[in-house]
Amino acid sequence: MTALAAPAHAATGDRLAYVANLRGNSVSVIDTTTGAVTATVPVGAAPNSVAESPDASRVYVASQAANSVSVIDTATNTVADTININRLPNAVAVSPDGSLLYVGRFISPGVGGVDVISTATDTVLTTVAVGNQPTAIAFTPDGAKAYVANFVGSSVSVIDTATATVTATISSPDARTPAAVAVSPDGAHVYTANYNSNTVSVISTATDTITALIPSIGGPEGVAIAPDGAHVYVTAAGSNTVAVVDTATGTTTATVPVGPSPVGIAADPLGGSVYLTEALGNTIGVIDTATNTAARHLPAGDTPYAIALTPAPVAVTSISPDQGPPSGGGTVTLHGTGLAGTRSVLFGGTPATDVTVVNAFTVTATVPAHAGGTVDVQVITPAGTSPTSTAGQYTYLAPPTVTALSPGSGPTDGGTAVTVTGTDLTGTTAITFGPGHAATSVSCTSDTTCTATSPANTAGTVDVQVSTPAGTSATSDADHFTYIAPTADIAVTTTGRPHLGILVPYLTYTLTARNNGPAAATSTTITATLPPGASATDLSSGCTTASGTVVCTYGTIATNTGTTKSFRVPLSLLTLGPVPVTATRTASAPADPNPANDTSTTTCTALSIVLATCP
Image (cartoon, rainbow, N blue to C red; front, side, top):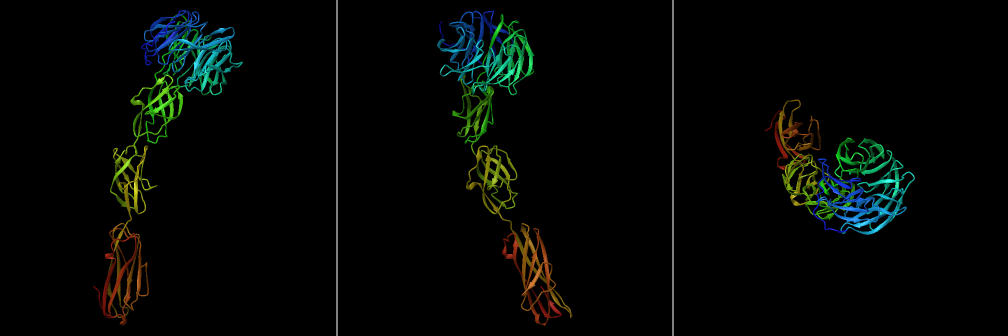
């Protein structure tokens, strides 16, 4: 055996299938896009298992009759090395980080083993004893465990890959002769095809126990899981069918007729298709997973028995949401390929928390805190780290600032259209005029300008703050808005008019309250002072008299309108001479800003009870 340095290799973007041809002693390399066989690689006798390294640089083929594993360089499609195996290699699997190759083989009657091989040197590091005739091996996406299906032993051995020891042996009378094993993309479940029990076991990786047994088609031999984890596909050579199992319900939802003697099966890591070996047809069947129909049959070698597909590249294709505050804390969903086994998610080099692998396409994580700006988001898996790309970027939004308001004041009843100038205003979700007083309408035309309608508030100065997904603007003198209480300037005027006669002579005084605005007056009180000895009669509604005064109250007075009240002062010999009446605004609402016009005096002169003059 000669170990070679790793050469350049096929990119994981090349969609290739590697098929071990049991009687052809070869591996067919198939372009899954065109369906053409692009190369045929001779290997040892009776190849019955095949696995590809996560970086797609190597393909490992177990040849049972040759007691060896062929190492194919995918760049040249030639055997770069041959690893000698003690006896009857029957299963191969590569660890998710590509550093180890596990090979199931015969050790002694009734005892199987797994050789742990360094892929760097192609040498056996240790051998782990497992059950009888290990037929299939599958790693959890994080590489912490390997599950070995022992066909004759009717058991599944669980290997702790860190210590290379068996930590559990799983078996059931209803799970005899497991022929194949697969692990879900989220690493939570293992599925085995139990050939002689006609069942599919569901094993919890948390407890390493069988949690369910799903009735399956007769003689299940191969098992594969879709990269989204939603369906399991099970081959049955005896009936030339593939069963489709819904993992959510644990029921078979479809049975797909395929070519003769389907055995090995693999789901396309990019989704959409499942590939299976049709051993007696010398073909590869392709199932369209959207319709659960056999869409194509591709040529292969003599007795295709096992199949491996090029791994999906580790990549982030979108992030939702793709922006948030520098404080972090929100949950984002990352979409991409090759995400099973994600160990960590980095935001500009800062690790996220609560990383959860949903399936090979989806990971969720809690955003860490970071300085403002756009950063690359990368996932780290055992197979590698996703490359940076514009699709895998997250923007930490800078919090908004308010630098100016125009106008900077308005009435307490609100309704003022205010232009807010600042920075980082894009994405504004709210503008407040003091705590708990949200603007009634908000419109942002750029990253530096928004308009907002002031809500009603009490008189005084408040801070206008802008909220975006990045946070809320800090308060400053630049964001001050002053609520001005409404005013109504009440101008008071008086007039007098004599009414003379021998019987009941009197003077009529009229008090006018005119509202000069700017706001409507809701109430006004005018007090008229009479000369000594005078009295008032025939008062207008809303007026009262006592102790030489007349007090008149007015209701609402609209802006630029006036309201009058009047009363009579009877004349007698005692009231001859000047009869002055002074009217003064003594109360009004809202406040009166102009006291200069609050008082008016009119003086009528009674020369006799039948002769009087008024200005």
